[in-house]
Image (cartoon, rainbow, N blue to C red; front, side, top):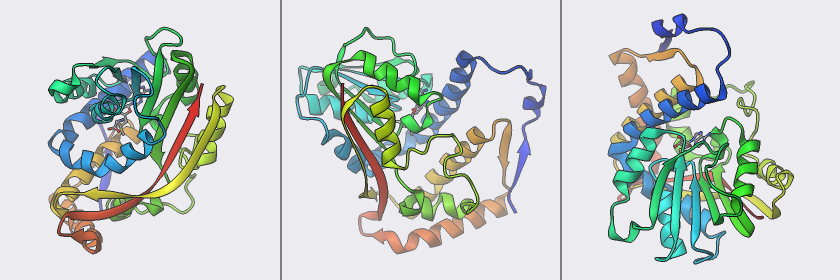
Length: 300
Ligand SMILES: C[S@@+](CC[C@H](N)C(=O)[O-])C[C@H]1O[C@@H](n2cnc3c(N)ncnc32)[C@H](O)[C@@H]1O
């Protein structure tokens, strides 16, 4: 059986509660590692997430303005999509807490059409922009990870101009995600008694984001859950290797100070079970997954 062991270094850490700045640093360091792990998989991940980007951008009229902000931009591929959506005159900023993500985002945005795109390290809870600055704000798969999503929504409202639009996409119910069911759930079956949202706010329910946006002072708030294709254009082996690396890192981020300690036989076993779970989704183009997402939009 897979065991999880304590990292020796963590037992020597001071016990006083970390400041918000220290928490931002820690979270940023973990996400920077995620950026490095993802780097061989940028192209297939982007193809897989394309339907999420399309759903998010469909909530924003094309050329809705010239100043765009993509919060928690990660490697910046949704930021690039926002720039294309707003047109060649647009100036679009991608911000993220993780310095490693910002480095990858800058390295990936070098095509000629991306001259109006730049990236800046910033926590969503503290956006380094003046009031009423942006016409459009997007956030793809970010808000559920924020330390203080309510503060982040207040900040986003502050930097959005009156009448400006915001659009989010988050994951819906993981039981309705073929990706989760064939990878994460194979590694660690979901605990039926576990709280649905260990972090405190359950972004998988559209009503939750709807209420948070309304409470933050946004208007014309809409949110819905929907099933979308999640097409993985690579092999099953690539999906298994990618997922194992990502979910091991997620375990370590959810359990600070622990490391995943899996011997070679256990690793082979997990991979074999994931491959078997993926088999029904294999097509000539890769894996034909679907997943539930939540799309939320609002106006300031
Ligand atoms: C799942 S990734 C999504 C990245 C990107 N939006 C995409 O769809 O490819 C989540 C991102 O949220 C960022 N993040 C987490 N907490 C944050 C915070 N408080 N402020 C800004 N970014 C944060 C992480 O660094 C990571 O890049």
